[in-house]
Length: 349
Ligand code: GLV
Ligand code: MG
Image (cartoon, protein in one colour):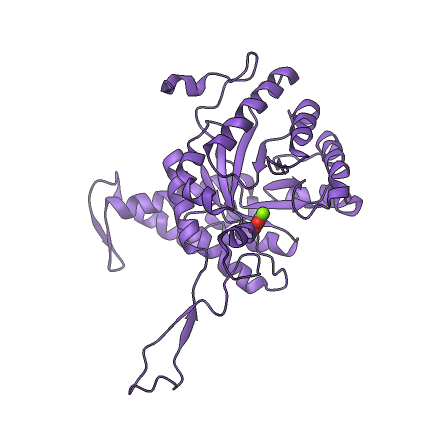
């Protein structure tokens, strides 16, 4: 048993106190780069102003013999890059890997004041968050940090999905969750070899006419990730943290990427990973409300006054619930407009 008050006591003497609320910062795209690749590191100054989050990846996609170079490269970027309002995150190696202890000790000791969020892959349950929580507190105390580094879990095992609520609620350090569709597909023994996105075999078909089952019938692909993303959104809202769609691996298919990101946005996600510069504009477009949606929300809020009554607008019924829906859009728009002058002009708030 644990008193609710204890959740807000530091887990190590001298560690910064846990946050009571997770700061909401624009996080429409978490842009992955390989810190062991000098060409990618050289592009950091150009890419950083165009993304909300820059993430130095140390885990999968970094070959085993490049792990130390990636860690050292990230330390160098964190020390030297001028990132302005862009957040710096990292994805460390999995908790059962031989690298994660050095990832965490090196990063927190050397550049802990520059890292906003640590993304933990393959989180299976609250015990993984508890371990990282205590270790981070010890390292923060030793490094003399004055604010806690936040944790973000990737949901990429069936056990992780089954335990999603306890993962989100395991620590006040939890900032959010991302879907990891590639590892999750493997762990669940799903029969897709794609990284996110749909599959032509996962579909529904219209009924036959005249009992001719072989005649042409319209089909529509379904979203393989709908169930998991919906569960993530509910668990994150329960805990007051943010859900994110993860990677979309078919870089050339910018259209399907946009569809997948938009499904996640409409269901409640705040952002997605971008693995290639091509995906950055897609995420910015999708995870920022449409100006027409913002002006409609403004009209509803104005028509509803203090929000307690009911109104008809262009033949559409408005009440307490639609007032709240519109506030969600307006809050996001205001928040993004502070960061993005083009959006501020388009929203005219
Ligand atoms: C991401 O890490 C994934 O496994 O999809
Ligand atoms: Mg993965």
